[in-house]
Length: 374
Image 1 (cartoon, rainbow, N blue to C red):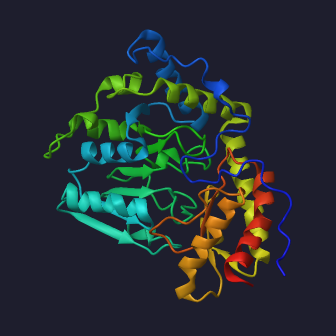
Image 2 (image 1 turned 90 degrees about the vertical axis):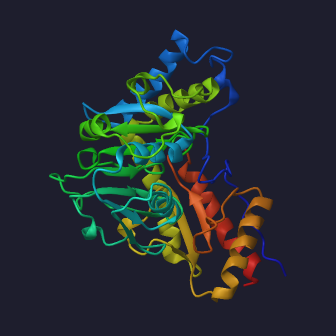
Image 3 (image 1 turned 60 degrees about the vertical axis):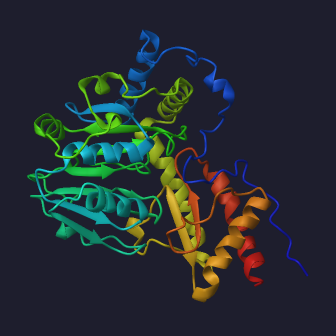
């Protein structure tokens, strides 16, 4: 006899890890003021772009002296722009513990072909040995592993008197986690994560140390046009044509962020979502966090795997569960990332409401029963 399904469904079933859920109450009406049909170089359009930059700086509490710009190709474009422009003068360490940090390692190795490169790795669910990062070398890392659900607990492993630059991919951390700006030199993110914006636009922030490197550095490799940074980028003059619809949407998300208490409010919302999952996971007979240490659990990309399930059945079970959740209309795009351990990935960033997370959890149990017959 089939078990009865839980009755309450999440009001919003969007738990994708990118693009992520829109802010509560969002509708297309939020875009009615978009400067569609206008050149992005027109004064009103440039003012909107500058507003995205300034509101982002203020909410993230970025220190004086940093510059921030809007760049093409989402967070990927921002990270690669930093790598192509800044690397070369020093040896480079790449900390790799999930798919995107592995991509930056491959770029450094196969595309830039850096002669003095060290890749410091750890498997999914763990952090690499942070003590191996050499402060005399440049260091590339993600703050939050979007595909592993493992985040850095702090930046104390980064020396204040470092000689190299720290290049931090913070796309699923910015606006949901406290970033230690004095420990960082380059920070990147996209609009599509914690504030639920649309894809294709990235943000690139440089410390004074990184700006000095940029001014002095003359890369030996060819530089595509979209990677060529200039002073106008920090004033809202984008390298390529941005979507003014996406700009309007980004501004809507930033204004919403201010209305819920700015950075502290956004962090609190994300941490409350993680706490709801953690309370459930502690009682679950079948689910466990992919992140092995509690202090490294992500409060945005929450990754779950299976307890005591035969390895041969894990991938099939994960596919069945994700498909069933979508069929029921309770969680879209909940499958783990293709390179990660089989399981589920539930986005819990600030635009996701905690009651929706709590409503989802009994459905996860039901999906497990359906997929495994238990």
